[in-house]
Length: 460
Image 1 (cartoon, rainbow, N blue to C red):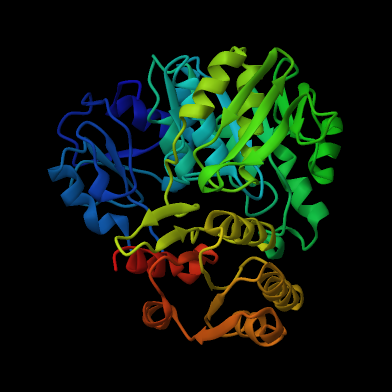
Image 2: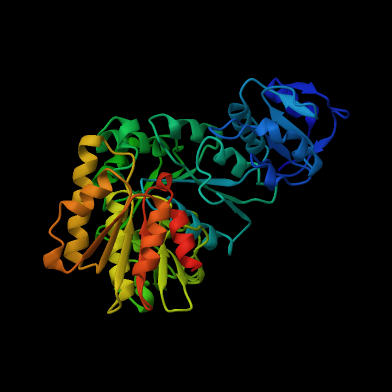
């Protein structure tokens, strides 16, 4: 955070100062919307959620060192009172960014944003001071908070940019205008809020490359036809990545090594190098190529890119996160999010990691799809479970998971199928069924809460 006095921030945000003893007190540290994460010298932004009102925690935030509270009403402690806290954070972030000169990298796509962001950050950190999105803070609240962590020494700002509706990326890129934009893929996420078709999803995702300047760089996944068509929607220089032979940044000789970790020959316009990733599943190659393409566009030498990818470790939980239990059971926690494409990738990763060991899939619902399409998508997922020969399926929750478990011929495939009505039921059932040495995948859309199941099983 670039140090700023409260009265300057108040002027910038057209905010009222309430109960502020020193209007020239400096804000020197990052902001937060979680009172448990207050940093002395920072701002506490009091947002109102479905279950919690941040204004109720204003006094505690001040006691823990916040200089003031960014609030929508007076709270009895030093506060900057604005009409809209979320919008004010965006304005503050944009103003702060204008006082610095980092290269902003925006990453969007239906899947893989967080992994790609983590990989790219670990490449760039070896090269220069880098700030990247924490966890999945990729929306109109999380992105400004990431920007406000940067300071004058920050050279790279790697921002995961989520989009639940058309216009979301336009808003985010207005707060943090990128010079490098990465589009990973277009898939069946947020279908109900984006217009109902993949074309509508692609239109929303293309807002990132449309925001790039003529001297910027658009990194395009040529393997995805919806993304490939975005080359005509940007003024920036285009570099393609993917498994295709025509991709400028591509992977050759892809193999799955020990623990289902992919290894491949990374080929870029500046050279080639062998890469072995420390994440599981062949689908991770595409995320690594996206990170490598962005680093290449930024002028990072191929040797540093490969070294960064080889040394990179998983940073964000709930995404193919592996826990080894003392009894030999392996838990794969991939419960942060789920759609048809990511479900397929996770099930293939489960089989690859397990080898000859028994496989258990604890699967909940996939959200964000039209109701008429959702049921069939879940039934298709059940067919994949049968086709792969997963040993045990535990379908969790009412509705679509019941269809997933009930409308497939599992008996001929040797799959043992079980239903759990809710998350606690899934924990009880899994604990009854698990055997030493099993490999267990836990996956569903985040809203369905199977991260609790994964944590309970990992700690068993």
